[in-house]
Every structure is written in structure tokens, then in C-alpha cells.
Amino acid sequence: MNALFSNLPTTIFEVMSLLARETGAINLGQGFPDGSGPEDIRRAAADAVLNGYNQYPPMMGLPELRTAVANHYRHWHGVDLDPVAEVMVTSGATEAIAGALFALIEPGDEVVLFQPLYDAYLPLVKRAGGVPRLVRLEPPHWRFTEEMLTAAFSPKTKVVVLNNPLNPTATVFGREDLELLSRYCQEFDAVAVCDEVWEHVVFDGREHIPMIALPGMRDRTVKIGSAGKIFSLTGWKVGFVCAAPPLMKSLSKAHQFLTFTTPPNLQAAVAYGLDKEDAFFEGMRQDLSRSRDRLASGLRSIGLPPLESQGTYFLNVDLAPLGLNVDDESFCKTLVHERGVALIPVSAFYAETPVTSVVRICFSKQDATLDAAIERLAGLV
Ligand code: GLN
Image 1: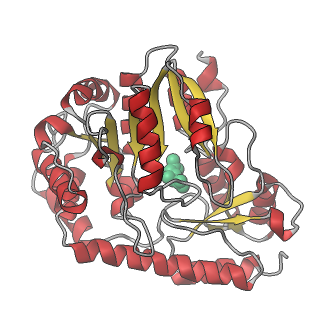
Image 2 (image 1 turned 180 degrees about the vertical axis):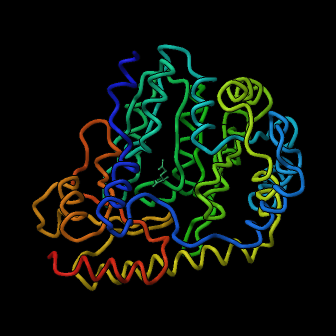
Image 3 (image 1 turned 90 degrees about the horizontal axis):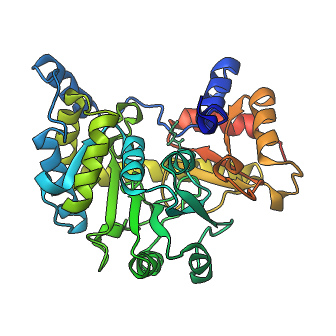
């Protein structure tokens, strides 16, 4: 048996969601909305099921979805992509990340990653034979600096994995951050694998800047997106990858033996959704930022002020300045049993020297759910 995989812990999202189900707790852990999602897009999927989109679609994805992805990014980010040579559909962003790492890394290649990191990255990097070089980000700002990148990059660097906006910290890296990183990618001839699944979930007038749009990055970036996050339909697992043809050639080889293809009915519905007018996407941001503000003010009112959330579905609370002398993991375990609220300990996103005082709280929920959670959490400090 493969020791790496048999020794892995169960992902924290499953652990906390299972605990929430067993205890009947309000689940503000795993990031998913508790509404049903846009009705017209769900109806488009139902129609596609009834109208014959049920056999294997092309391995690279339905042509209408690949065209919709290219149009969407041209419209939103001014990025010009050839839907045939530069866009591929995957079964969720995690498959895209796995495929990119398997396709790009040779054993011994170094991979730069930022902690806190989404928990799928590291096992996949290691299984691909990559040697992780970790950049450690800290609250409250979670920014990387030139010194950190200088320490992490080397002539052996093959890939850097960037999640922007960053889950769990809710940080949106802007042009300056991205330019700094792109300088290192070019100097060390590295490919940026950019997990941009939260690209539409940015708040307060912020703009998501895709790494692939930066000067010098067009041919060395793998851009990964996800319909699950864009449309708040997280169980659909429809992702898309964009990359220049030489990169796409190897990515598609990995994809053909990972999942080969993705349910065509969902692909058709996502194609429909991506073509929606700007107001839809802006409305979604506004709804989510209202939920963020509702939970943030609830948390403040009970003495648990959150850190800034610039994007994603998440708010974080740093327990250290509150004088709560407890690590995040014990805090979350106790909370689920004693208060009936499930959260995620951010230390689970670190492989080394974890920050152990921060908990992640999902706000993509209905008002009543958020209010009930605040009621249950009152009186902790
Ligand atoms: N992306 C989701 C989160 O951060 C979790 C997805 C999963 O459960 N694997 O909560």
C-alpha cells in the first residue's frame, strides 16, 4: 500500500461536516451555500438531461462550454483564449490541479506553495514526486514578501501553486503581489498553477486579476476555474482549465486518464450560466457580501471580531488577541459538541509550523442560519 496515501488524515472538511451531521450542529465549516442555487441554471441542467446530453461528451469538454469559458474570460478579464487549443473542462478544480501537477512535475522538481494551503495540494505534489517549498503566511494580513519568495525559489523550481483569492484567509492578491510573483516565475522559468476558483467572489469593488493576464505569464500559467464556486453549486464539480497550447497538450493527457470527461448535462448548464449578463454576477457578489457583513457584525457583537474578508465564502477569527487560550483544533471540537456550531481550524491548512489560533467560518448561508449560529456562539468571551 502507498504509505503517503494510507497515512494521510481524512480531510478536515469531511471530518467537520460528518461531526456536524452526527451532532446536528449548524455547519459553518465546509464551504458550501445552504440555498438551492440559481433556478434557471438548474433548470438548464434538467433540460439537458431530458434532451439527450447523457452520453460521453468530447474528452476536452462540450464545445459550447469551452467557447463560453473563453468568451467569459475575454469579457471579464480581457484575456484572449482559443477555446479549442486553450480551454479544457475537468471534473472540478481539484481534478484540474491534480492533472496539472501530474503533467508538469518530474520527481525531484521543486514546487513553491503558500501556507495556509488548500489541503489537496500537498499530497498531490508529493505523489507527483515534487519537493514542496513552503512560504508561510501569517495573520492578520497573510501577504508574501520578496524575502519569502527569494527563500522559496531555486533553480529547481518547476511550479508555483497560487490560490487567489486565497482560501482560507479570504485574501485577494492584487496586481503588485502578482507582479512580484510573476517576476520570480520568469526568472526561475517556473509555471504558475493558479487556482482561481473564487475569481467571482470578491468584495468591496475589488477586481480579480488573473495571473495569466500579467505580462510574461500568458505562456507559463495554468488558470483553473470552477462552476461550483461561480454559481454556488458546489456539488456539480465542473471545472475548467485554460493554458497555452504546449501546456494544454500535457494537461489534456493527464485529464484523459484521470476522469476522461465530465457529465455533459452539467456542462451544458454551466455554458448557459457563464453567458449570463454582468448583473447576475454582480448580484451574487452583493448577496454574498451582505451575508459576510451580517455574520461579521454578529461576530463583533459577541466579542469575536473577524479579520478582513476580501473574497471567498469565509471570515476568520483570530482567537489569540481575544485571550482565549486554546488552540484552534480543540476550540472547533469543543464548539461543535458544546455549542452546536461547526467551524474549520486553520491549522489544518498548514503542513509545518502552523498558525494555531485562527478559525474559519463560512458565511455563504441564509440569514436565519447565520443568526442562529451567532446566538449559539454568544458568551464565549
Ligand atoms: N472548498 C471547500 C472548502 O474550502 C471544501 C471542498 C471539500 O470539501 N473538499 O470548504
